[in-house]
Image (tube, rainbow, N blue to C red; front, side, top):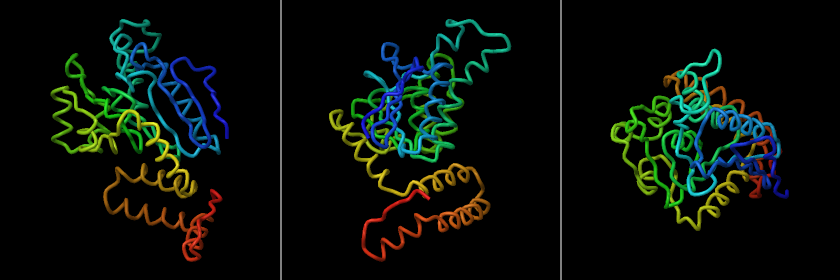
Length: 272
């Protein structure tokens, strides 16, 4: 499939599909790709498009220019941007920056999300990275939760940061606001790995092709099951996953995968 640019109607992002990969790019490089209410709305819309487009198998999230994202647009959060609308409070406006970052990326899509971290990922930008299923970063990227330095606290980011990073290390990042490089981000679990900047595209493409080679039906069931069970206590989680395993075994792709294994041939997925 030729590359399709379907970005018409978006102001802050680009939406492109190349083959079976949809790439969503934060596209305000002159502002270091800030995340404001309009950006959140556009990201949600683009993720819905990728979810509903049957030919899309993997979603890549990245940034234009030298930054992945510097995080929330503080000028809008603090009242320096557009005025509050009727019925809007500073609380609800601030919340619009983080709901997507930490709760909705990957949830309900049924397709793997990959963060292509081309540069610094700070605050809400880091939240986007840890919310994705997988992440590969350029060795020129760095990461931080600098909210404490401007009298703020990464409330929503904590919900996913502590699911990826050990408690003491995550708390150190939050309390100090200090930066870490890509190698350290990989060591503590923020990203899967750091690669040389000139290898970033090739590494992300290789990962996407590995994911595309798997059953889309099983991928969807597995990802949905993961997001549903991750906050359950152990026994309810096991009971839920037992039921989901039964659903997987009933798919045509599971039958095809087992047959292909026994017959020592590559499987031909039907997505059912």
